[in-house]
Length: 169
Image 1 (cartoon, rainbow, N blue to C red):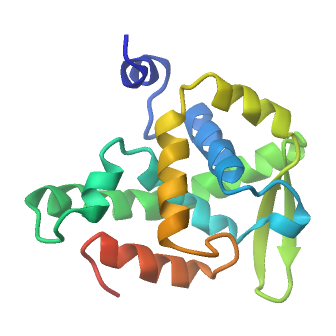
Image 2: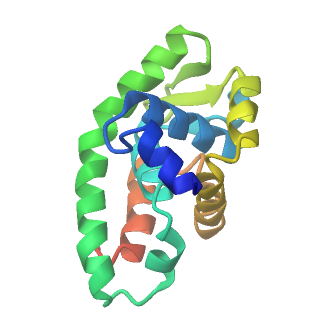
């Protein structure tokens, strides 16, 4: 059985809080957000990053022609889902923070909540299971496309991701 099929059986990828929690943790690990010095600034960035990394065809969609009908069909829906999931990721981050799995800090300079992993051992088990290999690979691709992804502002991230999605602000 393929890993994609296992994920479909184990989770409802769009709304399952467990799946969203796992992708959040895998995203933080893949971006090396493992302490306060290397935290992800602005929790809102988790929604667009985590939404796009779950697509097995992400690399093709991003690097194919912006005129492709496939892109026009998938990516606008993805951005709408991203906006809808932002509050979910904030709630999940808060819940994981209460359990001591992630650390949450407030950055007064940029006036936003920042997040980092506190229990890296749990995420290492997830990554070793190879269930989230696609997501880890896709985070690596995005972090190469957008340097300093951990520290840039949310608005800057969206401006840099949207042209790849065929949409401009």
